[in-house]
Length: 299
Image 1: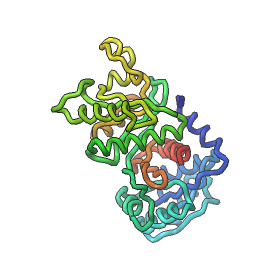
Image 2: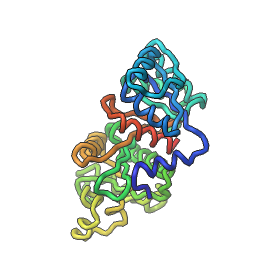
Image 3: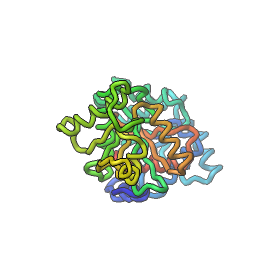
Image 4: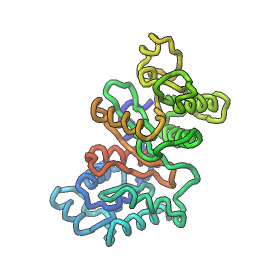
């Protein structure tokens, strides 16, 4: 069981080789701070792509120890994204990281079929949270990529999340397919999808995890609430993965954990050839650091 981000950090430190990270538009103080911390811990080897003069100036002004890092000077963000995607495609880097550029500019090259970064499955966002009053790390998906998934897309999002959890050492993650109710209601599509995913899990079409749904947030999070309501499930109070009905719900739950509950967050896009560290341009250096650790753990 992974209880803290430090547990995940130990997974990366135990790897025999450093993970190489291609950082696009690296001329950003918070990005460089996160990258510097991961490099100083011996977790990753940075390849900084962007405005070389700005990158060096930021490092000098902030005292970041990245003087020996390889820097690729590029004309603009689009060229940087193309170069980074090509490095991933060639196997010269194992993680792709977004710096100070628009998400669309980076993903445009990721989905460029000529480069071969797509795997045939859906790309989805996974957010990993260390929540102060929860006893282990919990994943939220998808709060940042697939806007309104149908049941088959939810199955692929679930497969992505399960694969990530297994790489973190959780062999059979417990999955809560969240809804506003714990009862299937034909007028509520989210509950219908949740029940279908549970059926697929029960009959073996979705394997390697335990799926519960539809299930409400309180029954997912708190075993005592489940007991009071007479809801018997191995997932209650033991959830590893929360599968949300759509991106809006995923984003709201994730930001509630982060802002109101004081959780720490790490976020990735998965489903491509390599994990993509893709957090908000306004994210703290700490969030970018833990997202790098997360990526290195599953790369």
